[in-house]
Amino acid sequence: MTAQSPPVLLVSRTLVAAAISVIPVLMMMGEDWRLVYGALIGCLTLLVAAGSFERLNLAALGRIGLTSLLLVVPILLSTLVNRPEDPRLENLVVIACYAVFAPLVLSSPLEESSRSMFNQMILWMGVAAIIVLHEAAEGDLLEALLDRRNSFDFEGINLHPNYIGLMGTVMGVAAVGIRRTALMGLVFAAAFGISLVVESRAGLLSIAAAVLCACLGRLSGPLTPERKRAILMLGMAGLLVLVYMARSTSALEFLQDEVLMIDDSNRGLDSGFTDRTELWKATWNLWTENLLFGVGYGQHTEVLGMGTYAHNMVLILLADTGLLGLLGFTAFSAICLMHGRRLFRQGQRNAATTLVTAVVVYWVYGIFEGRAVNAGNPLSAVFFLITFAGMAEVAPSPTPLVPR
Image (tube, rainbow, N blue to C red):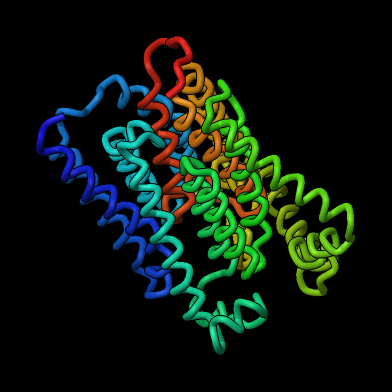
């Protein structure tokens, strides 16, 4: 690395963390936010490529490019077969920028060289969440936070509350690599609180998945003093939760009524879930009529005519890009998990944990919301940056496990 590279990488990490975190704020400002975000990411990619050209790894870029064909080919085939008026292929351009940007700036997702980007992202995302909630609050923000979803006007800011829950999910993924367990727990708590305020069940379940992945990552490997402290703290926290739940049914009632809202007249199993299953059924029927290529990338919402998307990543992939699209994205995710396993065997435990967490959380969130091959939201941006970086970091052949 030359003397020129560190400042370029430092500035780029800061700017991309801010750009990803500010997406919800841009969405509130107008419909042209995609152009603004896409232009910013494109400029950052050119800046990094020009300032760090000597760091380009052709083998890593080739590995990323070949794996990305699993995503790109089904989309292009679906577009050629269906020829939609608005093919929405600009998403692929942004994802291509991620593919170049990630191996240059995040060649090791959770090592010291790039941890600063994730720390900044946590900070920026938290600030963005406060701004969005403040704009949506109908009265005093503190009172609205205590009263939760009922005291916010999300239609007034043209932003769905689940999108704010997604912001908490991004914080949860970014928190996985924090080395101090107590600080990581505080970030997880803040992320959980953001999703709880807006009653985003997808966000809550996704953050829980991130916590589980983080715990498994911390508990694996040799028992270093740091890992012993982490096991002790996690064990004590788990014990306190079990004792509380054993002594009182209020915890279970809170989970059922306040978190999952099973008995809620508007969002319980007899209302919101039923509406979603009707949407899922319609999307499934749409796919059965277009088995191999779907109806076109990003087109199922218009074809269904129900005023919303399918809220399920699997069904969106099937309806938009057909069976080829689902198989391609599943294979892409499986390869990423294999890279995570390989990173772990090479001793890069933090990077492996981040990569696995990104894939697991993306699928958990996607089952209830559906993002898939999408570049226009913070969670998708983080997912592709981490997966591409993880592919770039894997060495050609496994090396013995050496703790870092």
